[in-house]
Amino acid sequence: MAETPYAKIFSEKKKRLSDTLLPHLKTLFTEEARLHKVDATLLDRMFEALAHDFAGNFYYQVACTVDEQKKAEERRRYEAAEKERLEAMKPLQLSFDEFKNIIIAKWRSIVTQEDARAQFAIDQYCEAELRMFLEYFYGRNLYEGIDTRKGFLIMGPVGCRKTSMMQAFQNNPFASFRIVEAQDMVQAYKEAGDMAFNYFYISDKRNKFGHESYDICIDEVGREERSVLAKGASFSSTHINFIEEYIFRLYKNPRRLHLITNATSYEDLTRTYSEAAASRLLKLFNVVIFPDNSPNYRLA
Image (cartoon, rainbow, N blue to C red):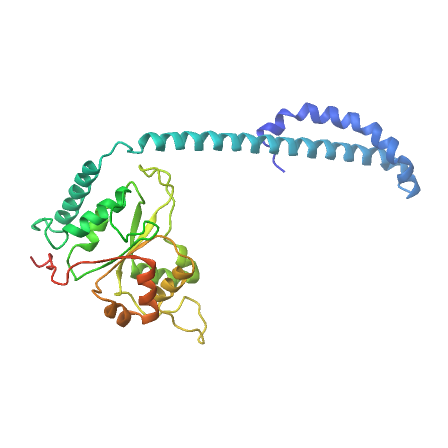
């Protein structure tokens, strides 16, 4: 075994320990060795080897222990410093109005980046939904019937800016999240099988709001492939609807996340998946439905 830096420090101690052990080993085991007819000319060499190995192994273990203790202490200091840094960065003094202004500015920027000609406005088609999200993600939910243990099932027509609104909320004081497309999750399943069900949950201690993990927001739900097999599956394997299976698993082991879909009604959800999946979605999420007559802003 290669010596650690600490083991080198113990070289002289190993020699002294070995010399101290040698006569004791001879006293304890000479008669036993002779009983088994060990050649007397080999005894001194054997005892020296035993004493040397014992001393070397003892100090190697000491060195490893010291090394691990040092690393553990360094980890503790780092984690304490990181926690202190995150707490210092945590915007506890951020008022609701300041948070609102930040989100609206982000949302406007996202919309104009997608289309420089786009007209950004908070109108009757999104005002109530925006206010609900602001309250929820600021952490002071004032809406009756909204459960902060649950995420949002966001439904609405194509182009009504569901996704861009959620993009603006990705970093927030209550529960930061990351957006992933449903088809990316399906593709991950095709490549890696069951591991894909947990692929997209990440940790990041650098989050400025002090969160050590992110929720996820699954976008384009309902537009993904609906019948897939994992790579390497046998010819007799059954194709699965990955997102539907994801919903069933989530129902058994709930965790907060968000879904965005172009479905606009319960009937749409049952046609996309099944009544069993649709009913679970309503139970698992706070449901937000943008108005049916919301304009497609991409065409405006």
